[in-house]
Amino acid sequence: MPNDDVVRGLIPLNRNMNYAHYYRASTGADIFIGDSVIITAAGLVGVSSAATIGVENLIGVAIGFAGPNKASLATDDPFLDASDLTTLAAGLPAGDRFILVADDPNQEFYVQEDTGGTALTLAEAGAAINIVYRSTTSGNETSGFSRSEIDASAVVTTTAAQLQILRLYDGMNADGTNNAVGDYAKWVVKFVTHQLGGAANAAPVV
Image 1 (cartoon, rainbow, N blue to C red):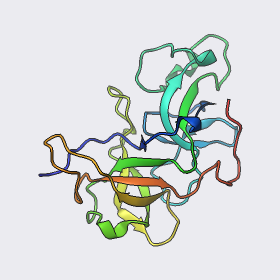
Image 2: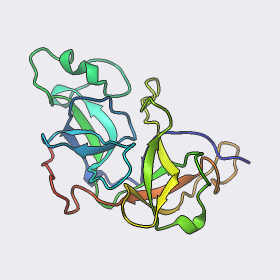
Image 3: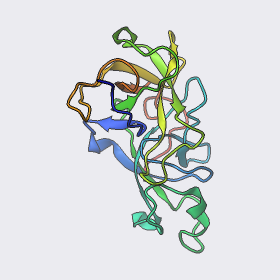
């Protein structure tokens, strides 16, 4: 049977909560659960340029959000709406929203493969691969999840990519069949380079 088509970005596998921290959010773009994020030059955290092929020093993956003083967001959106920056609370400066980030440099994630190009095979384990958005909209505003996947047509033989493929995810589809090689397969990955793993521009957590 075919694999379930459930695009949700990168989902932490066996999450290590010792490595989940709040970071002050950057302005500029909506951020969804499962988005890869990066510390900006301003020391804030924002969504990475996922559609850009090549190495990115990422800090982790967004797994939650909070407003000023780490209280609830002013709206009940299931994602961090960039337009809320001016309405969240009067007089607060940029950065008074927070992103909870799974930021362990060794954290593993599972993520869905897209349908572009030739489907990945088990022999791809160890290869590097890039992230791609399912559509021009980076996330689902109803569910709050990212629409990022891994790009089956962008496997590289060097480390010049965002993620490394570790293995096929050991999971099941809704019909009881095993996750299998092919369209929409789920793969276990980790970051190729990490901002807490010796990369430059690592900012303190809050």
